[in-house]
Image (cartoon, rainbow, N blue to C red):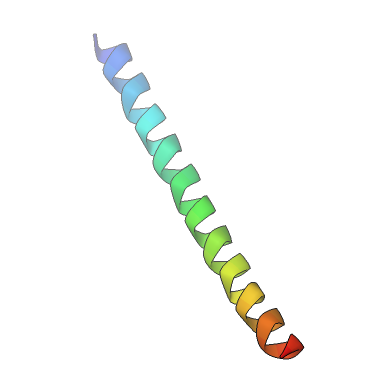
Length: 41
């Protein structure tokens, strides 16, 4: 029982970490897109 809850906890942490990474990458990509868009204008 303890092992299962630890596994779920680890899985939840992994998902949260992946979400955070994607969020940061998306923000960086959006920022780059805006900069590139402003340069091309």
